[in-house]
Image (cartoon, rainbow, N blue to C red; front, side):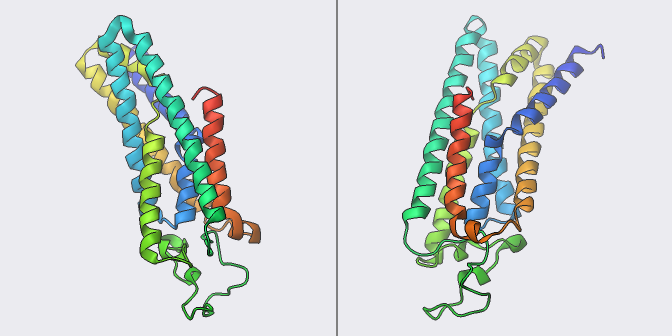
Length: 250
């Protein structure tokens, strides 16, 4: 291939795909989706929103590096600092999430039917057990999460958790695309537009696709241990994911 722009676009797409396969881009959405009882649509919307924020921040830093010219290194350093902050906040989010489910009173089992509650059996308070209320794709609905609290409270927590997670994951730029944007800028507005669109589409499609595959793949992942501690494990895994990415330099 002798067309520099075509090479640049293909390189951008390849970089975006491999970059978004890093677990911190999709695994937290799978874990929170299972915990909060999200269906396919909500998981896709939350992941796509985060991906768009990720793209805007990454392309914005690339443009800043191009316009800054001699200050490009400083822009890249700023991006790295933002990434470290995002990873640290992800650690805090995951740890807080795990602690909330561990210490909060009442049952919170969205990873399957609780061992001592068969489907259709009336709960001791005279209400159907929440695990009988499945959401989209057979995943328990948000109402099923909080036996000791109201469905409205569970729904609010699910929305807040999703928005917070989308912001945390999205506010972590892809540093690898900055030089591509910088170089495309030197080739003209058309090249800059082509590279930006290629990065945006490949990032959004890949993040959403992998998250949905992960959600579908874990839909029937059940065991007594996961049923009881799945939410705590989810929060811990999110924290560990953020910690590993932070230690590896984002």
